[in-house]
Length: 237
Image (cartoon, rainbow, N blue to C red; front, side, top):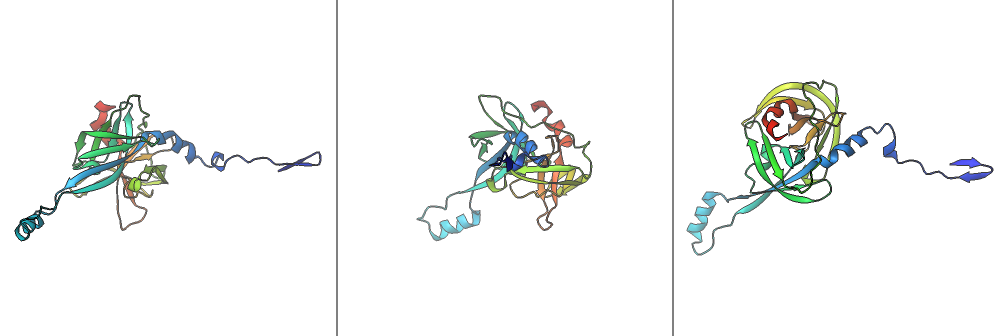
């Protein structure tokens, strides 16, 4: 509000997100179109023993039907033709894969390649126009203490953003039969459903892919270093 020649002139302040201190906003806006939400459906057969007992006790009744299970995850587009990187456990046993873009458009996707042991997967959605991609940075060049951004879609919620720093690097981890060769540990909040989403540096580049959390330790998240992923997806870049 200003006074000029005895009159009060009301000026509209600029939006707070344009303040120079909000340096995360332009980064998130830049990468958002390349980050997708993934929903999968798989049909799980009811326990076989339950089925046998049902047939024995109720021979004239139909056997219980299959149950549809849905799961959620995140992925990011690495090629304009619709190739999307995500975690293998996000799409494991999926009969149907749906991808939702940042503009709300939903499309079907199919599995191209997966590595169960390394927990990596590549899916593809067909689109008439080239799709925006997320640039891949270098996890080797990243440093402990560096500020990073984690973006995911927990429980299908669109583009949840958390920030933190790299706490540790180059940590091999074996868990649930999977081998993670190059783990980047962060204190970004990585929630269920964020798996497969990118860990992004301040240049707007993916330096890792969110992999898992330790449930009983708040603020402890792990991502697979992007440099250990590149050799497996190079032909799709």
